[in-house]
Length: 185
Image (cartoon, rainbow, N blue to C red; front, side, top):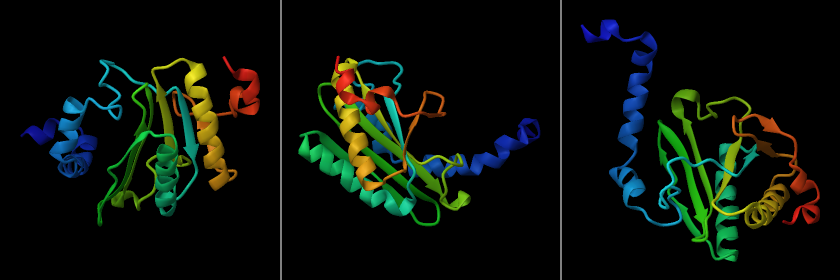
């Protein structure tokens, strides 16, 4: 029998994987192929996309609506495109999917999922909501955006804005945020 050869860990996670695959509408799968807008980080032909800067906001699920409003307001103020494809599947999943971007190559893309099987907590203890900034532009173009976004987030959630490295580790406050005027390139 096939299941006798599969590791138990695969069998344990198979139902969860099936639920996840059923929740993702075909439109989302197609969107990465057909979406040529600034919301798709692969639209310009990139094979791999890593954030230039990653903000971690230690907020609860109940703050998601506020975070959505803050980022939507930022997008409106700066004439960025904004998408909110967040969803709730009662008894299964709460998902926060936000994207704000410019045609010039700046993208903030929040993708958080909280599963009922984990009591709607973060999958990695100690993690908040990641607010990554992707940029195909030089530092001189994206750092002022990062400085402004961090300032806005800190004004809403004082003491709860942190920074993460490429491997998810917490980092000290970056130097360019400590003295923004000294780091204009």
